[in-house]
Length: 168
Image (tube, rainbow, N blue to C red; front, side, top):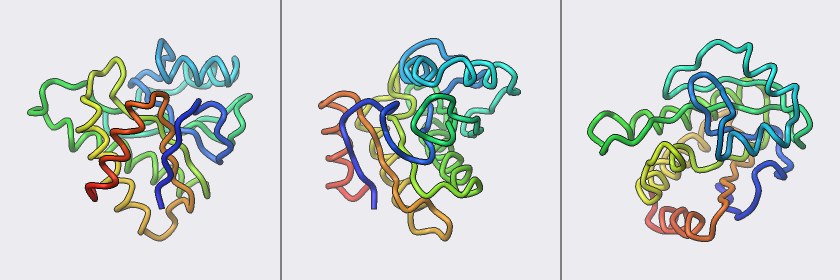
C-alpha cells in the first residue's frame, strides 16, 4: 500500500528518507537543502565524499540527525519536454531507491516528488510515473512494507491523489 501525506519529509519516522538528488549529491536547494539542514554536517560530509550517481540511479548514506537510518539519494531527470526518456529515467530513479531500501533491509521509506522542483518535471506526469512505479515495486519480495510519499503542498498532494484514483 502506498501512503500519501502532506508535510515535511525530514520529520517522517521511517527507516529511509529519499532525497531528490542531483548526480553530485550537492544539497543546494529544495528537498535536498531541507534534508541537509535537518540531517546536519555528517550528511554533507558523506555526500561530498560520494562518487557521482547517474541519472535514474540511487545511492545511500547515513541519515545524520534525521529520524531515519538512511538517506537514499535518487537522481531523477531534468524535464526537457518528455521526449528524451524522462519518464523512463524517473521510473528508474524510483525503482533504484526502492531496490536500495530493500538491499538495506528498510521496512519503511518516505519519498518526495522526485524531479518536480527545480528539475521542472510537471507534477501530474511525475505523479503518474511515481505511483505506477511504486505500486509495481510494492508487490515484489523484499519491498518495504510502508511506502510513503510526502508532499509539501496541497496541490502536489492532490496530484498524487488523482494518480492513485486513476490507477496509475
